[in-house]
Every structure is written in C-alpha cells, then in structure tokens.
Length: 630
Image (cartoon, rainbow, N blue to C red; front, side, top):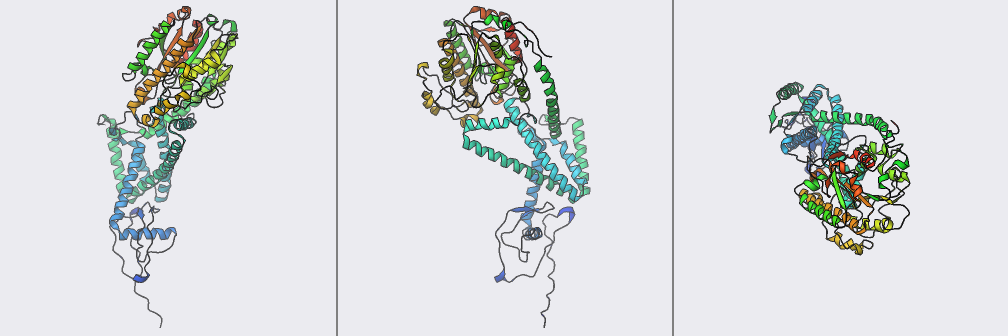
C-alpha cells in the first residue's frame, strides 16, 4: 500500500522579533523534523540584510527543517528561521542596526564642523534635512523608496567626503576645499606624508582611507535604506511624527531656540552643498576675470634701461623662509625664542656693517601652498588658488625677478632645495639657472620633508654661485625649507667649514625628534616650529655676515603662516619681510615706507597685501611704469 501522507504540522507561534517591511510579520516555515542522526549543522556566516532591510545573522546550527541551498530565497528563509529561533538576538540586531543607521546619517547631516576648537556640544543640533528625508521616504512606495534611499545615501556619502576635505583644508590651509582646483593637492599631501612618515606608513594610510571611503558609501546607502524601511512600516504614524518634527524644527528656528549656547536647529548639509556650488561658480567666473587682470601690467612695457636703475651693481638676494609667519614673532609660546634670535642677529649684522628695515605683508595663502606666496610676491598679482597660479605661470607677466633679467645687467639664478622634479616655472621667474635638490651636492640625510638643512643650501649657493667671479652682479632667488612642517627633526648649526657634503648632519638627524611624535602633539609642534624659524633665520644671517659684501642686498620674508594648529584659529595671514644692506642708500630709498629698524617688525608696522610688494619695490628703486595690456 502506498505510504500515508503525514498531517501538516501546526504553525509555529509568532516570534516577538520585529515585524517585516510594510507591517507584515514573519511566520516560521516548518517541515517534518529530521531524525537526530541525520540532522546537519553548518558554520556561522556573517550578518546579512534581506531586501526589506531586515538584518540578521545565520545560525551557527541550522534550524531544523530550514531549506538548504545558496539562492537568495533560501538565504532569506534561513534568516527568518534564525529570527524565530533566537528572537531576542534578532531584536537586538534589529535595534542596533537601526540606531547605527540613524546615527550615521545624523552625523553626516551635521558636517562640516571645525577640527580646531571642536566641542561635542556642536553635535547637539536638529538638522532640518532630516525632516525632509523622512518626509520623502515616508511618502514613497516600497520599491521607489529603496531606490531613492540608496541613491540619496550615496549622495550624502559624497557630500560627507567633500565636507571632511573641507574641514581638513580649513584646518591646514585656512580655506575651504575647492571641487574644481584642489584634487591635485591631495597628491601633494600624500608626498608630504611619505617624506614625513615614510613610504610604507603612507601607503598603509592611503589604503586605509580608500577602504573607509568605500565603506562610507556602502554604509550610508544601507543606512538610508534601513531608515526608509522603518518609516515605511507604518506610514500614518511616520507621517504624523514627521509633521511634528517639522513643526518643532520650524518653531525653534523662528524663535532661535538655543542649546548649550548655540542654535538648536541647523541646515548644515544644505549650506555645505550651497557653499560648494557657489565656490565652483565663482571659480569658473574668476578664470576669465583673472586672465584679463594678468594681461594688464603696470611695468609690462617698461624699457630695460628704466628698470631698477638704483640697484645697478648690487648683488640682490630674494629669500623665502618656509612658514615664517607673524605668529613666530608674536605668539607667547614661539615668540621669546624667535625674538631673541632676531635681536641677536640684528646686533651681529650691525656689527658687520649691515642695517635692516622690516614690515609686514599679508600672504595670499595660509598653512601651505608656498608657491602661491612666492608667485604673489614676485608677480604683483593676488594668486590665492591653483587656477590663478597656472594662468600667471603661462603668461608673459613681468615678475620681479624677471625684471632683473630683462635689464641685461644681472645674471639670475635660483636655488630650490625643495624642487625634486622638472620646474617649468623657471621661465616665468626669468632665472638663467636653477639648482634643484639634486644639483647642490648634498649627501647627508633628509630632515623629514626638507631635503637638506638651510645652512648647507646656503653654503652650496656660495660655493657654486655667489662666491665665483663673474662679469655681472647677481640676482638670486633662494627658498629655505628647514622650517617646513612637521618641524621634526630640526637641523642644528655646525661650523661653516665643517659642512662638506652634508654627511656631518647624519648624527644630528638621528638624534632629533621624529615627525610622527610631533605631528600629533600641538604643544610640541608649536615649540618645534619656533625652533625651526630660529634655525633658518640664524643660518641666513650668518651666511650674510660670512659671505656678504658691500654690494649685497638681502630681501627675505615668510611665504605664509604655519597651520592653524600652530598659529591659532584666529591668526592673521601676515608674514614678516626685511631688507638688509650695507649701502645706506639702499635703505634710504624705502625710508618712506614706515618700516621698523632691525629684523623684527613692530606690531604696528605697516601691513601691505603681498601683491603690492613688486610695484612698491620697483618704484622705490627707480623703475618707470609703462603699462601693457588691459
């Protein structure tokens, strides 16, 4: 006889686990129990998420009667069976993933916040965008809701990445991230980390950042889908809650209700998106406007004979000291040591027959991008972004250094220990010869980002250029890099006759502080920054004492302030500038500038925009304007 068919087993009781999407409740799928000796077990698998947004993990031991296989339906059935078997664990997972989703989206909607001076109370806000998101997701049917939530999550992740970059740029460069111009600076940041922390550490950090970005996109999309699923379970209740939240937000916004001393309601995400849109639009408009500005040059058509007649016969040296800012002279932590160095250097130069006058210039950049400060000083144009820099470098605008070459009365040379690749800017600056990091004969160790100590670079300049006999006087542009962040390790002065090929700095580099120890310590960074400025100023002024002549004219200045972690959140963009000479006529020409005697500018000394220096310098030393373009 045929075997009889067993009666269906009664349905299992409903689990107290959370209900499925759209208000339905999972029911256990049951089959006849297999004999104990044939029951199989499977290894645990990671937590998974079903199409409705429910999250659970597969059981360590397969639920009796659970379907076997690998299809999506089978996996979903296993998850439901696991929830029925472990209702408390399922409920805990459900709540945990929901809360984490809300927190992730909530934090993303509160960005950007300042990195310097951040306080937890800044996160006690009600983002208006959260109400809009809830309203949209509640109103949509299930399938469109999932699609919109996933795309919205990816968009919010992209905005979060931009906001994090904006926060980093604000902390280091004192400005926001520019979507059009600043992507290429990320490679410069990677190179800086490689020089400071080593290639292996930088590679690991880079890989970690990429993984986090991918995880952010995936996590944010999943979080938005989860939130949409929760809202869709009971549309009426979600709608009522959204209306209440919207009413509260509007009321608090109108009444300017505050919490912990700050407005309770915010709309940061919308504001950030609007700011980026404005920044892109302004950047595109600025390109055409600046191109016209660069073509207009007050001295563009000045004949060679009418350029710099009052400096003929002088060896003129323009020197930029990396990160030499006003904070080095006026900050209570750094100033005492730097002031002592400036005072002793002024006295030593006076003993050698030199006099100095000093003032302030407001830099076009802050915390980094030194080339913007260099080009602004020497071009007479305000170059505060990469687009302007590229525009002026490709133009025939007359740079201050090129003016010396145009006269035919000077040989022109550049000493660039920070340049380690091709440097097409040589043409714009009008330099006959440029010595880069590999052409100065240095065989000693690098000091973090700096390829060589300033003292060695200056001695190499003396040996290769300044100390040689020549038919014409010399105009030089020198970039000193020992005061570049992270300010560890810092070189020490050695006897000038002991420099050799730089190997003498080996023990000094090994004994110095490690970059990784200083980067993460604000106090140490400020202290070491001050010491690095003392070193650079000492090296430069000792070079002048040792090798300067009656015809040497030294112009030196900072290119920008150090990062805000060192200079302070409200620091100015001012940098010191000094002109030093033996010939009293050189300083007499700038007597009307109101600058301070000595190497330390007074607090109330005149402050000019850095872009004003070229024209003032040319006029002071007898140049006659003959405009071109514009």
